[in-house]
Every structure is written in C-alpha cells, then in structure tokens.
Image (cartoon, rainbow, N blue to C red; front, side, top):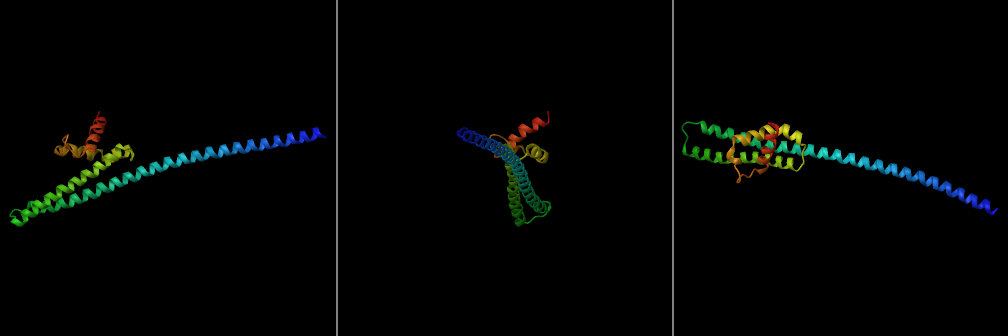
Length: 169
C-alpha cells in the first residue's frame, strides 16, 4: 500500500513537471515573440521619426526661402527704379539688410538640416536626394559665407566636403 502511495505521488509529480515544462516553453515563446514585436516597433518608430524630421527640415527651408524670395521681390522693385528719392534709397538699404537677414535664415535652415544629417536623425539617402544640389549651389555661389575658420555654417561645409567629393568621384 505504501509503495502504491509512493508511486502515485511520483506519477503526480511527473505530471506536474510535464505541465510546468510545457508552461515554461510557452512562456519563453511568448517572451521571444514580445521581444521581436518590440524590436519591430522600435525600428518602425525610428523610421517614422526620421521621416518627420525630414518633413520638418523641408518645412523650415521652404518657409525661409519663401520669405527670402518675397523680400527679394520687394527689394528688386526699388532697385530697378531709376530716379529714387532719398526716402526710397533709405528704404532700399533697409530692405537689403532685411533681405540679407532672410538669406541667413535660409542658410540656418540648411545648417539645421545638416546637423540632423550628421546626428542620424534623418534618412541620409533621402536627405542627399532632396538637398545635396542646393547645398552644393550655396557653398559654391557664396564662398564668402563659407570661408573658414569664421563661418557659422560648419555643418553645411562639413556636408559639402564629405558628400560632394564622395558623390563626384
């Protein structure tokens, strides 16, 4: 009788061990699945964040360019006038100063974009496709703005040096 109780006890423990093993395996499978879902979510979120950063850069650049273009048109109207009054000359000089400031804002928007490029906050391929030509154009057409060591556009200049040379090889 005692042997029978011992055998029943052993059988019950074996059944419990088998159940525990199944539950342990199931827990491990669920945990692995959760980790995979977490990694995929992180990668997707990272991609969305980079897309949003690129959209933000585009918006900043477009706004700055639009403002600069509007001021340039106003300045051009005064510039072409042949017989300017003294007040129109002062207005032209003031508008040139404001226009220069607006151009700095355009360059600052590109500087911010290049900064995000180097910090891997944007998709580098998309950034190059959208802004490489403009950056090259600005650096080459306005060398005074990018003369080292006094330039305040170090990130644009770094982008130009690294990427323009790399693409043109």
